[in-house]
Image (cartoon, rainbow, N blue to C red; front, top):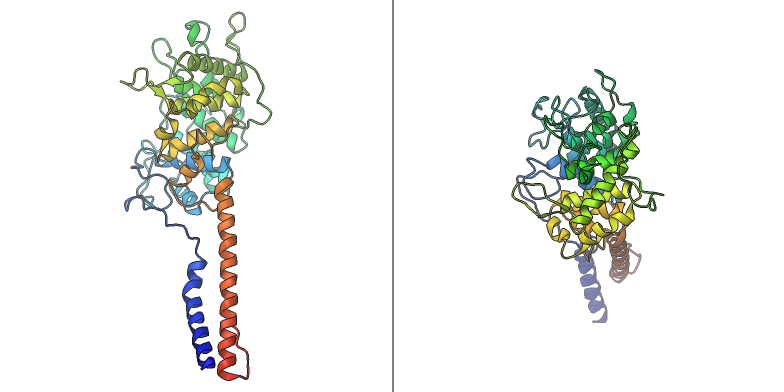
Length: 420
């Protein structure tokens, strides 16, 4: 009777082990939500990627890399797979097998952003090299880039291209136009408002050269202020935290012969003064958005100020972004490009993007796409603990199963031990 009961008990234990072991070895986390059957695997965000797929993917990868998160391989594969045969990138290719239109379908901004992202995550040297080649071939005579190949140079596209060269250890000052020998810095400096502009607009950048008077553009200024320092979207702020207040442009003899560094200071001074006048943020330039704060533009301005070591000037705008009044976390919720901008702003300014006014921006960003290969911070700690607990559980179950197996074998045969 005792033997039969023991055999039955051990048999049940063995069966239970077989059923439970697979569950114990799983990570215990729910599968990520499907972002829609029409969206490709590896893409960040659930919104239509038609106009910003490559852009938001690039920013997401850059932000993750900046905070020591290793993106999912599928996310990197998707971005690299968007590249056109000639090295450029479109805004989004629903069918990567279909050939790109070199004149209309490829964009300087998308190409430059993708190059920066692929260079940051590593392992895509060929794609990066092809992207750099595309940018060099499509440089305008004034040294800059337009949104599309051959289009008029603009501050944003030129700034993004500079960032791509900087990210690949190519000195932008040595990237010269085949037509004129001009550099990207020549193109940008030609868009900066000087001493003949209104006093409160000096140092700002125009988006493009217009037939009339150049108009100050806050978004163009934030982009150019970063680029004329030879920096990409993720600037190296090491040792640049105490450079004092930005210096406004000097007027007088030789004022027009300014260096890129002086141009950057003038742009930083303009941004700092402008944000201070609006309560710590930029205003939206979108039609119909009068007096509406520009959260994304403010984040870009914070990155630009921090790149110059002006963290004191960036402190109030950063505090505004983190506040409930700023509403940045709500503005960016579910949007990988917007979340990435906030992560990069916090990272550049020396703040913690995992505690951004009580919001973990990194966790939110990660949740918009495929699960990262590796993460830092609380997620990594939790993962490590889960893995340790799972490992302990698995070995405990394996031990029980081994004992059960040996017990059954002993009771049945009495002659040998059986290991499971």
